[in-house]
Image 1: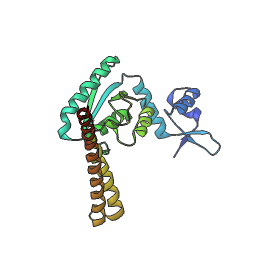
Image 2: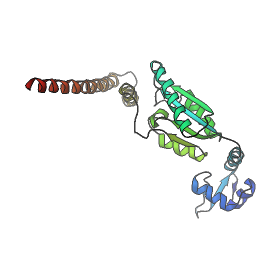
Image 3: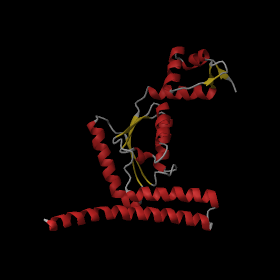
Image 4: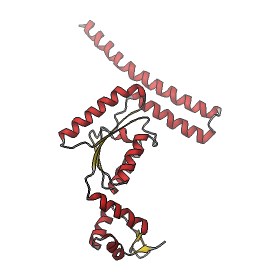
Length: 229
């Protein structure tokens, strides 16, 4: 594999050595390093940078991304898209494309997410707008944020709260995680795996019951206080 010095890479790309150093610092084009710390570039890096350089001179897209976890929540998906449109209009952003998904935030093979990643990695997207971080990914949001930034794309999160998922969606994701690790530990169909998943479901059900009882208890206290008067 041929490696290019920073000066050779700069000549191939038609930029200055200082520009390549700046791209390295910003994470736009990060080279390999020799044992003595000198920068070295592969042919693949140069070809990718040439593609990015070309695309950066062309208008790039503002994309809205919305997701719900199930078909039953599709009305919520429409509301989510309307909310993102309103936010974008308020920021003066001209929306070029809207991508939606119906599926778990733990599923990295969502059709819409794959399409979004393809657009970003081709350098075609300037800004991705999402309502909450967990609409894009339950875990690994920071990874996507850094990856997209490498291709000149910003992820704009409307609400920076840690989580927006309803309790049911969170419970389903927790059960999915438990099922995955139970299968890894004990095998997919073993009694111990099924028992572990069952225990997680029971714990979640107990937690939900406890949350439902608290408001009822508060109402009983208020009612008793009124009678005492």
